[in-house]
Each structure stands twice: as structure tokens, then as C-alpha cells.
Image (cartoon, rainbow, N blue to C red; front, side, top):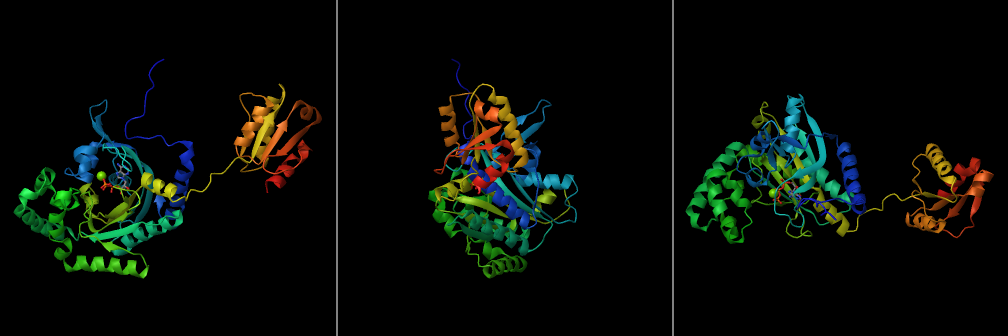
Length: 423
Ligand code: ATP
Ligand code: MG
């Protein structure tokens, strides 16, 4: 026997048993996002590598070490998308959706990052996201947060907390950057290798470090909030005001800077302690700078991305999965000549009863084993087409879930009888 080829490490098959949870997640999100006026956008899974270098930033974990990049047959460097925001902005610019316009967009799909696989962290994972383009001010940031809050409610999920912070305008950020660099320079020997390197390239990211030996140092570090100019702090307090008014609880986390480079003003994360180490289920904020960085005119944009696998774990753990639609009717057949007629009968029932979930026996088998399959399918009714029924122009109906005598019905009354018994 030849060896079996196996799935790539960190990538997963989503098997039928898990699909009800996935469909539920995606269906609820689609309906919710559309109800806030967001419209779906789909972009290619592969983009030019340059898009992510420019859109995410050279000195981020994603671009430095997590991208799946390769040269295509023309020698051009392409990458599997590690996130979707850069692609959405690219698509918006390329299709003329962005200039002086407002757009609310949502997306859903797989992303790819070459990280060390562990629970809640995979190499192919899925995100649900929203991007609001062309809107200045904190109201749209609040809307994105409120949409997420309502999503948790509709999913039946508890124990997800909101953390927010403000990075201020780009001026504030560069001023803060200087303060921060000088603070960390004074404690250079306490920095790990990664952070010493970041001190030159992306010092804000040091605040994001998970290294336990640096936590004290980070705690004592200057706070962004103290470097905000008055416009930036007004912006942030207005956001807080809206959240208070809408009764959304939040914590201001001064260390929240987000991994990606393009954020300004509000950044937020929704976190849970019920998933272990990978506790962030949604992350986002304002990223005005990205549009210009990708070649557009200065503009406004804010958005978030949610990690589907982490949410699916929560839905399953908190027993919020609704049962998938089961089979209504299972058609079994007895005798050699019945197969073709049965198939025809099934098609005619599908024509006449919209949304009927009907499975037919295929692949042969004794009557007994067919009935076992009928039972396993979860169907309420078994239809039996045997040679005697064939001759008489009838079909037998057996209730699989209730104690009722089997009935033989003429084909002409079959539809009404099925409908009556299913209701
Ligand atoms: P982390 O700090 O956990 O690496 P991140 O800042 O890289 O997260 P984002 O790029 O903001 O994550 O992605 C948004 C969300 O997508 C995350 O909050 C998480 O829920 C999910 N996510 C990110 N990377 C992965 C991954 N490798 N596997 C599964 N989910 C992921
Ligand atoms: Mg990451």
C-alpha cells in the first residue's frame, strides 16, 4: 500500500460534524452585518507580496516571519493573504470604491500565517471581519464595537470582555515613540533580543511583548494616554461616552497597541479567559493611514477581524450549537425494478415540496439494512417503494419516531399525506 498524503501541519479539515457550528457562526454574522448596512466583499486569497509589505509593515511579526510567500511561474513574489484589510483597501482603491465615498463592508474567509501551531493558533485559520471606509470620528468605531457586542449576544456567548486604547494621531504617536525609546534605552539591558531590535524599528511593539521577564519594565513604561493631544483625547472620550450610553463595558488597556502598523486613534480587542493562552477573539481599530500607504488619497477607515476557530471553540464549549436541519424523509426500496422509479418519485417530491430534506437509498442493501440507514438519518418518515406498491401505484409510509401503523397511500395523495405527517 502507498503512504497516505496528509494535511499540512497547522491546517485543518472542517468535518461535517463541525459544520453546523460554522454555518451558524457565518449565518448569524452575515445577517447581523447586513442589518447594520455592511455589504460583503470577497478578494483573492493570493496577492502580490508587496501589498502586505506596504500594508502591514516590514517590521511586524506577520511580514517578518509568518507569510506564505513564493515566486510564481513569472518570478513574481506572491503571498497567501495573512489578513484581509490590506486586500479590501486594495480592492476598494482599484475599483474606485474609496475616493470620497463611504462604504461598510464585511468579509469571511481563510487567512494563512506560518506560526507555531497550538490550540487557537493555526497556519490556515478563518476570519470574519468588517471594514468601514470613509468615516471620520469615533461614531463608526463605536458602531463596530457595538456590532461585535451584539454578535456575542446572538451567538449566546458569555465571558468576552472589551479592551480599548487610543494611539492618538500620528503626531502623538511619533512623540510617544521618542519618549518610549528613551525610556527603553535607559533599560536596554533588560530588553530581550527581539525588543532590542524593535527599539530601532517598531518600539511600540515592545509594549505588546509577552515575555514574562519584561512585564515589570513594560508596566512602568510611559503611557500613550499621557502623550495624546487634545483632539485625540476628545476623540477617545467621545468613543467612551457612546459606549457608556450603550451600556457596553470596557477596560482601558494602556498596553494595547496591536500588532499591525497602520492603526491610529482607537484600537480595541475582545478577549476571553475561557480559551487559555489564545484569548483574543476579535481585534480592530482605526487605520486611516493605510489608504495613503497603499496609494490612495488620505482617507478614513476602521475595522476589525474575528478569529473563527476561537469563536467556534467557545460556541461548542458553551453548548450553543443549534442542531443542523435533519432529514425529513428517507426513501427505501424493495425489489430490483424499483430503483429508477424511486429516483423519479424522489425528484417529483422535491418539485412539489420546497425545502423537503429527502434522502434516497443508493448502493443497494437488504431491506433491513436500508431501514437501519433510514433510522440513522434522523428522518421522521420512511417511504417504502416495493414491487407490490409499484404494481398498485402506491407508496407505504412508516413513521420512524412515533408508534403509528404503517400506511399505504396512493401516489396522488402522497404529497398531502407527507406534509400532514411532517407537521
Ligand atoms: P495574536 O497576538 O494572537 O497573534 P494578532 O494580533 O496576530 O493575534 P490579528 O492579526 O489582529 O491577530 O487577527 C485578528 C484575530 O484573528 C485574532 O484576534 C485571532 O482571533 C485571529 N487569529 C490571528 N492569528 C490566528 C491564527 N494563527 N490562528 C487562529 N486565529 C488567529
Ligand atoms: Mg499574530
